[in-house]
Amino acid sequence: MSRRVLCRLDEIPDPGSKGFEFREGDMLYALFVVRVGERVVAYENSCPHTDGPLDWMPGQFLAPEKDMIQCATHGALFRIEDGHCLAGPCTGENLTPLPVHVEGGTVAVEF
Image (spheres, rainbow, N blue to C red):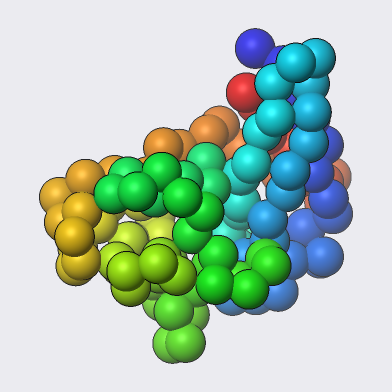
């Protein structure tokens, strides 16, 4: 596995989200992180229903109440803590999680 530093923790609103795209060799990675307090989770930016991106505006992955991840295409709602879909066309499916670490105020992901 490789590790990539994404940003500083204080660059992510609390609660809030931030998207990232980068290349590693021939691979393009699209992912996002969600912060609630000091806790950060990371997921691939891909809806299990359509494989399309989840953000409704660049970097915006949360429902208006900021308590769920919301897919822009069909409005599916996912729990922040584990990416499980609670409502929408992919109910019962899950987002693909990525290992994420916060060390010294820096957020890094393994892929």
